[in-house]
Image 1 (cartoon, rainbow, N blue to C red):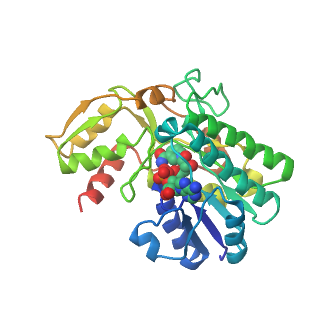
Image 2 (tube, rainbow, N blue to C red; image 1 turned 90 degrees about the horizontal axis):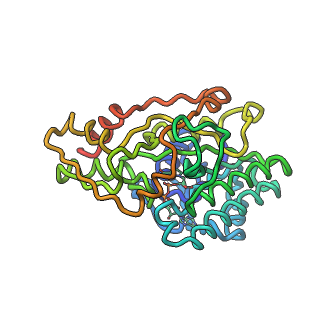
Length: 313
Ligand SMILES: NC(=O)c1ccc[n+]([C@@H]2O[C@H](COP(=O)([O-])OP(=O)(O)OC[C@H]3O[C@@H](n4cnc5c(N)ncnc54)[C@H](O)[C@@H]3O)[C@@H](O)[C@H]2O)c1
């Protein structure tokens, strides 16, 4: 099946793997990668690439017209930890990029949009365990406020203008192909690199900080599944809860120790602890299972095996 797809923010942790997966599915020339910087060699050499700023509506429109783009995956954003340092820049990037894409869809220049939300939409007053789809949401971070506002706007554009926008609330993502881009769950990737390099790691979150997490293969599968789903089956047009596993830093350390027995972990929590403390520990994603058959495949043990095997090569 041939269709033209644009990925904005394609050189990041998710965009890199998403681009490769979509090129595999739809053919390399049908999937246009774009970013404000160049990406990995494998990404750059596998198909078309455009330098593109997600906040520049006219430039995006040019690329959309030139390649006759039908679907846009908007992956450009400033993530949670970096956004606390640059609140206004984060707000401008996270919101204006979304408005650009929603408005292109409203103008019927594209037909479908994927925009990712995050577990950061929840806040310190949200129930922490098995956080429901619909619950109290009072995000206390710049990033979380931008994601919650984004969700409201997605639903609004769907209801008012019929924009076919689809979204999931990703948990922290663990991957080996690309490093994470400034989030609060980055430790769960760094730890594998350091375990192999130095056999020790100092974690910036405290012992017992249990957070929802997911291996990248599951995240890519979820993204492609929700985009493939029949529009009528998608009852939620803000963003779906999405879960796979939940653990604290000491549990990931124990799982690494099963493979590297002399691995040592120490803890020096920094400003990211407060962000993590405001987020859920685990997620109820039953709506995603009911509406588009979501089911994760990777638990912590399987993730650890994949991470150590691939990073160790
Ligand atoms: N990685 C996670 O754990 C996670 C969890 C929840 C939600 N998300 C969301 O998923 C999306 C992608 O996240 P990621 O982890 O791949 O982020 P990332 O930081 O790794 O990648 C973002 C990419 O966007 C690019 N970018 C920045 N400003 C841009 C601009 N003005 N125009 C075009 N590109 C620009 C960056 O160069 C980078 O390549 C974001 O919306 C993020 O909020 C990620």
